[in-house]
Amino acid sequence: MKFLISMHINPAVLDALTDEEQAAIGEGHGRFIEALKQSGELITTQALVDPSQAAVVSVRNGQPVVTDGPFLESKEYVGGFYLIDCENKERAIELAAQIPDAAIEGLGIEVRQVMFADGQLEA
Image (tube, rainbow, N blue to C red; front, side, top):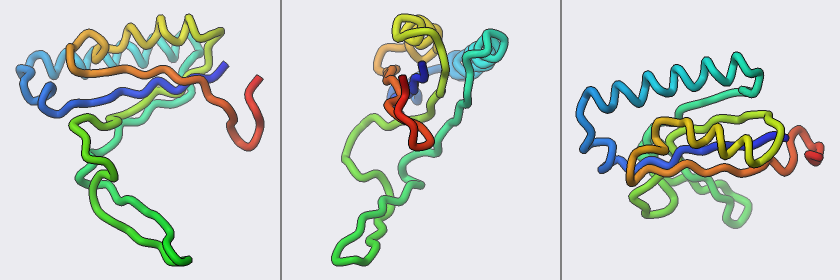
């Protein structure tokens, strides 16, 4: 089963961390990635730029409309994700709990099963 584990970032929370705490998060992600590679459960992982560098695209009257920055006013944003392939939801939650961000109040980890990929419904 495939699951998307997304990391929801609150920049105020990250800014309040010390340099050492921020470095520990990065090191923790490195260890987590290696463990997922070893177990064969990692499909891919990506970190995303700050929403201020994003573009929002919509189509109105057949014409694309592009605006800069995040679509919704929110203090949190998706900062990155892991796409994994594991036995079941319980295992996905177990893995998500190992992400360093999960231990920091104000940051969130979301686990969602992939419904379809490459046009094929997931079993």
